[in-house]
Amino acid sequence: MATKTVSKNLKNDNAGAALERALDAGQGLLRLTPTWVPRSFLHPGKRIKLAPTDWYAFGAHRGGIDERWFSSATEAANENRTPDEGLSYVTYDGHRFLLRDAVAEAGSRLIGKKMWDKYQRWPVYSKFFDNMGPIPHHMHQGLEHAALVGQQPKPESYYFPPQLNNVDNNFAYTFMGFEPGTTKAQVRKCLEDWHLGDNGILDLSKAYRLKRGTGWLIPPGVLHAPGSLCTYEPQWGSDVFAMFQSLVEGREVPWSLLVKDMPPDKSHDLDFIISELDWEKNVDPNFKANNYLEPIVDQDASGLGYTDRWIVYGTIDGQQLFSAKELTVAPGARCLITDPGASGWITVQGRGRIGPLELQTPAMIRFGEETEDEVFITHEAATAGVAIENSGSEPLVGLRYFGPDTFARLPAIGDYLKTPGGDAAEPVAAG
Image (cartoon, rainbow, N blue to C red; front, side, top):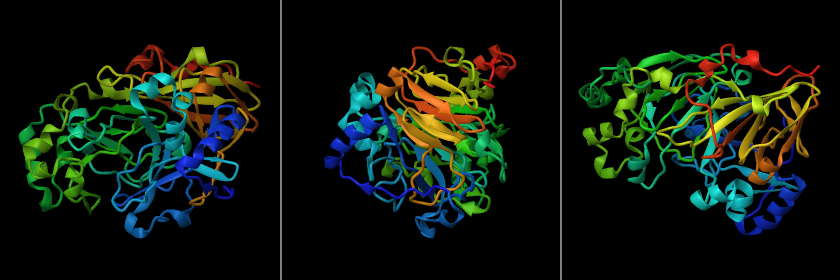
């Protein structure tokens, strides 16, 4: 269990000096504290290491905590939210301050000049998404429709870490999109039947069995009903969504969760609501081939005793918006990882060091406690190279995700098929 004392908050105007000291002491690495997010309409899956006494730490009226967000400068769009909900904190020397404020203070140093000049923020985040059962069939708005309510679009991705999935929970399948041949009239009928109980939206869709160690790329406007494997989700820095399913496991989904990110005057315009769907992507007859991911070993970033795998890759509408890798370091091994941009790191197995910072995977975390499993790797540190060593007796495994246009080249969707056997090409482990 984590036992560190909770640090005291520093306000934005006092964070600058502390940030400089933290960057110097961490050699460009920043220690982050756990960021927990509840959802009122979901049932926690209980695999993200939060202590059982704290699943409802925000209050039962807020719902259970089923998400932990990483390296986040994005606020959670929950009703009755706390002021800092969804935002990550940097901790150093008994004090803490928002990562969002740190980026505002030293943008180019933290995320690189190119990203800072274009976005003026860290525009992505990731999380563990952990539920006992499936969640409603929903989509995240694209650029055009999110802009109507002053929001950002939300493309996202999935990876199912084996370390967080010792059990399947209730429904390890995800419905995605629609069956080819589905019509807009059929979807409209589902919306018309919203208040009759189950509106039948899943009758128009197809479920895919979820497999540990694989993932998916989900463009905006595409319906999906995530299943019950714990999911690592790199995504764009937004929390917009629209629920299209009226009843899930006997629980009512209010109409307000369908239209929460739509203009008020369109909240009962069924044709408008349907227009927010990317229709061609939803009825794509090759949906799996165009969206499914399996890990690919990055031979250029792997060596004796360590393996770096691409776990999220590809583009969305031709844009490289985010990506992610999984680094595995064998017991006793060391490596130097050099990336062309910043990343958010979370340790999912083992213990060791990253630069001068300790890494330890906790077995249990009390709400509000600080841990040694999460780090923000600044652009400055990533491009200089970060030393990582495994000081434990089991593999040290860390996931790290990156922002837009970080890499000159990424694997494309389907490239895993070009390397039959996948891990057969893995470098030999140390020892």
